Image (cartoon, rainbow, N blue to C red; front, top):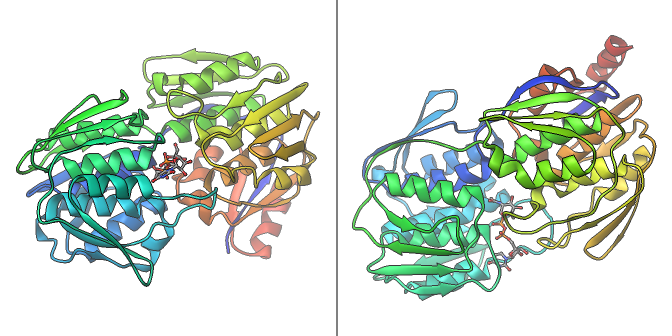
Length: 431
Ligand code: UD1
């Protein structure tokens, strides 16, 4: 099982290029299968979750071809099988987008129920309620499948009780070829919602209001081919911004949309960093010790739950006490015990972590509990004195393209190792 081995305390400096957004690509790859022609998707990140969806699309008969490292052609017109039962798909959350896409296009789908990181209870009741409102029958079958079927899908008014990224995207997929108009109320507003809507519109869909809390979708008869480039990953960019902050570095994250990063930039400025926005760049300079602050995760444009663990690492190294309130998922503090191994001081009470800043961390062996917490532990190790190891990096690879390589590009001492012998070589090399 591979791990990252890291020698910390090197201030990170330089430029890092951000990949396409994981959470946008997962919706877009499913959506691409709804066209009758070939769709070209550019800026596809090379992350495990996206690769699993691509394999699942091939398995149901779509033609999938990488024409360049980050460009994929998808022809969904050859899909002949509406059952997605593929071992890896059970492990990713975004399998649910295949339900919406296949239901929307073929009026039928049988998909293994979603998995994903264990960050709390992750129901799909809002997705199911929405599919039913459009006229679909939904059944949960033995063996962990969801089966949806409709004679006909008809536009409906759907109000989400909770703001849900997944349900909003899924209902855009399921309704964009339904008869009549669908109105989604209390919709999520994340940048990737807008990206999926823009993508569907370039294929001929008629979706208005994405990015606000009311989305109006007028059903169209068919969708056509297009060529589309995915937006940059807000969370990958934010992770590198915090990497600069915790190592006292100076890092320019390139190929980003600075507006998507405002909630993260604002917090880093409050903590004493200098944040300079360019047209497609954000530079973070950390000259002084970070200052404590409080954060509360909220749906966009609030502070993203997917940046909560990384920010908590920065707050653990700040002067004073900070309070971190997680209001989206209830089980997102499993990394706090790992931080304690490095010398972090925090107590968790329900959905709140109370953090006492410490002067520094010292290297330790750590285990990544999930995707974002895993990335946060890598940041903590980069800030720690001495050598750390982060195990179970398979989680990190779900959502970060070449994480170690990109960090090395800005000066980090980090290697992926597969054996104690490799780890020993690294220790000898870094001295
Ligand atoms: C997506 C992202 C994930 C991110 C999260 C919040 C993908 C593949 N994953 O996850 O990285 O952390 O948005 O920004 O895009 N809920 C229900 N019923 C439902 C659906 C959700 O109660 O049917 C609740 C959830 O338990 C959670 C909240 O709604 O408390 C938000 O979840 P949601 O936005 O749906 O997250 P995901 O789409 O799973």
